[in-house]
Image 1 (cartoon, helix red, strand yellow):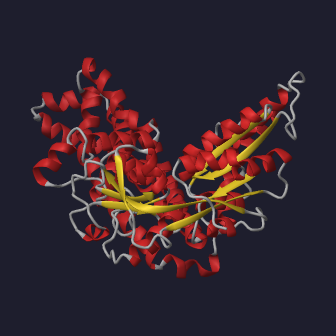
Image 2 (cartoon, each protein chain N blue to C red):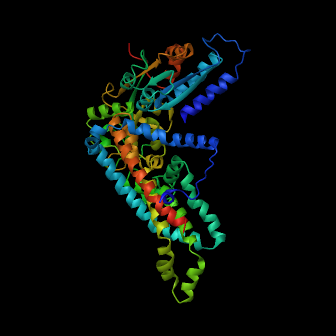
Image 3 (cartoon, each protein chain N blue to C red):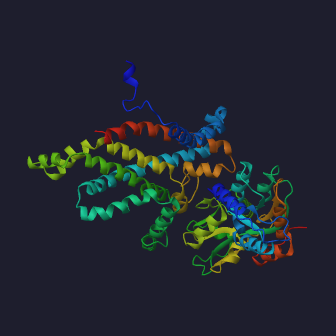
Length: 248
Length: 271
């Protein structure tokens, strides 16, 4: 379905070639397809509309999902000009298709719960309480991999009630009140005023590094988008949303 | 001898244009399945099929889909009966509501179930406050999702099967002194047997394949709520061999169901 949609947009773009619009953008009237981690939903939506404003004629189409799912789609030949992954392992798995990724942000998983704290969550040990219902991402998704490591360091041995396919799915159930707590990203808590978070003891194991790269056949517009994310304009959006600057 | 196998409705003049479109239509349906089969790791099929993650998903799927189908029959038979023989002024309104889950997007079904039975749901809230039980993330939630999406199939097929029996047959039995319950058990239900079997198998198969509503309502935890379709989704990203093995098992079930249904559906509707 995503494929059909992007094909349709491509067709309509080329059909409505607007000769009047002259732009300094590397290639006007082009569409770029960005596959981005689910945890980037808000920031990348904002960054792409800023990018479109700065580059008239370039249309950015973003598909958000778990990084592992996106990496799999790329391996299966999904049309992707840019890939923004929430973990280096998902990015590494598509090293052939996306040869030169760059780190652009860091994030970390935290224990999130409703601000009113009805279950009186004070430490990560409270997750071991059998009456507390909590969930996390599935093990192969970056937010799940980071959660596994951080929970182990903190000595949480209880099992989550569900291993969800991506962080948005975890967050939706927390916001809907179906769970008492959930392991999500710090940026998710930033974006939801009704949520509060508790940090894990070991912030290093809870951390994940975001990287972005373009396909080897990517257009100049796609390369410009990746550069834009790394530029100050892109970084400002990410930092305002609670992301940390990339290492080095 | 030759004529025994030929279709009496076969036309000697097939429009080539239509035949070509028919071929394209066939390929659209057949090629993805063929592609899937080429990726199944046949040499290690058995080894993967008995691995823990696959067996756990198989166990959850088989158990929940059978319970869903049994409950769908238990509740769906009376419902189909009511729709077939009840007052039209009411069945006119009830029928679309009963059939709607059949065409509803699964995620909408999932939200609907959460809104009713979730911890903050219309009913779920009171159940949780009174007993501390909340249905999401339990195996029961998988069963309920299966009933919600599967029972409409049973009702749809069985109602038509009930209607195939001329009402005069039932009225004759009643005139001869049979009470309505006896008419139902001795006349109506036995005559609709093929429809009941076809409907039950469809309800079961639909429950077995359910994914979206279950993921939203029940979550996904191996051994508790992770069914085979969810295991496929999860393994696609980490362990493709088992994703393709489980897909092949589900495909085999689907093909068996179709062959089984062919004869039963024909019996139901071509009496």
